[in-house]
Length: 321
Image (cartoon, rainbow, N blue to C red; front, side, top):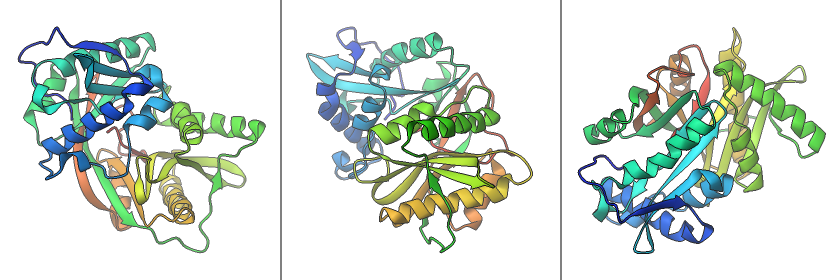
């Protein structure tokens, strides 16, 4: 749960890179913080058997930071670098320490990381209904864009569902990852999902689903599936997906969604989860026509105040939580 205000600083709180030994405590703080904000009867039950903390640390330990007070973890934040696009979240602080400036201090190393990596567009997902959260991030130069809808649909795979995996052979894998980079770059210059693709494989989170036309890759989707991932039991979660832009993009997008459903079904998933910016109007409408329903919505915030790849003509799924 992102810290909304900055009433007073806590100089006794130290900020340092996250260690593997911090993971259980950081996970507990994250769940309790979100669960408390959302008013859950048991705040620690937030997300069930899905997981952010351990997997995001494993994906990039250098982009995870903790707040420590008296030797105990009281907050954390995770950054992701998608080439020229930098994201952070979840940013969470122990509820009894909210409004003491800890969240702001946790963001210092994140902003330094983005500057070092020459990120041209930075962003986050936060609670659209919370003026405190939106105001906090505005004070750091982030400005609200469109709503992002987190949507769910029952998986109904068809017999002709076509998809291929990224591949395991080094040569094949390298070539296909390069094509994925080109497709991402067509959405926004320098956008690169290589880190997410590699983490999905190395951490064992799921699969990168590819869509081919005439033997050529024209779309890809990074999918998590099952407990211990960002999906959870019975779900296939599309962390990112994109197709080559152009006149056939809508058709390709539907085929890629079919591929994600087919992959999910092959792993026993019953529902498909996908996040989409409502700025991508055609992609959002297409999800609605396919029976997706919104279960959560938030607002993305951007620095600088520009749309990046949140544009009506682009068929992209992503989720900046």
